[in-house]
Amino acid sequence: MPKVTFQYEDGTSTIVDVTAGENLLEVARKANVAIDAPCSGNGSCGKCRVRYISGELESEQTRHITDEDYAAGWRLSCCSKVTGDVTVLVPDIASAYKSRMKVADLSSPEEVAIFDRAKQDVADAGITFENEFTVVELQMTAPSLDDTMPDNERLSWAIEAATGIENVKLTYQVLKKLPDALEEFLKNHPEIKEIEICTDNDFAGRWAKEQMKKHYEGTYQIICNLPEKEGADYADLAKEKKQTNKCRDRPLERR
Image (cartoon, rainbow, N blue to C red):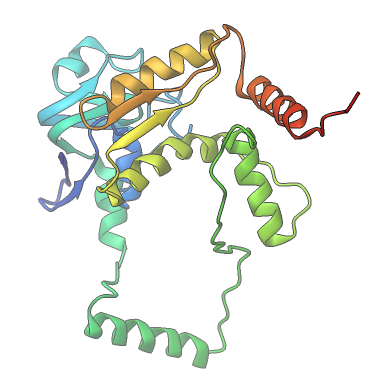
């Protein structure tokens, strides 16, 4: 498993294990490494610059990086893919944020005691903190020929059912994290050896199948399960299956 080392200008560093192919900016976010990215990683602002030091990093030159800067190692983290062990230097903003942050190690009894005392001191001072952040644990059924709902709808419906909210809208940033959620799931379940790819048999579906096959081939046994009819999708298959079952279950008429 590749390791990413984020070096700070104060000489310290953060090291995190990743999956090959992960986006460098997303890795930084998950590791609580502060990298300025006003455009949220869309490649439009050019602010999420890091300096490549060594290792394996797939990163094309963008319009925000001059030839001179690119030669000096500067890369946009949102446009960089980790392909092996790599070390990068993060700019001043990360070092500045890091110097002002206190991160508690809640696996340490001493740190937990410090955290609890600080919490009690705040409460004794009559200070209250409120926000609308809520953690919701969701359970969703796996898609099948009888249930062909897209993942985004499956997720939004599950949130609506768990919270009682009538209309949940998933942002682009949430949808971007769905593939990361799959990677995290696979990383936490090494017993999984086989991946079945079920996409529509149209141009987009076949392209997605090839990309997923290319990404996972060699690590997992890949089974591609597309509808036989070109242009068909899983909604079509579900309708056909439902009609077949209906005909099969219909009682025979005696003549």
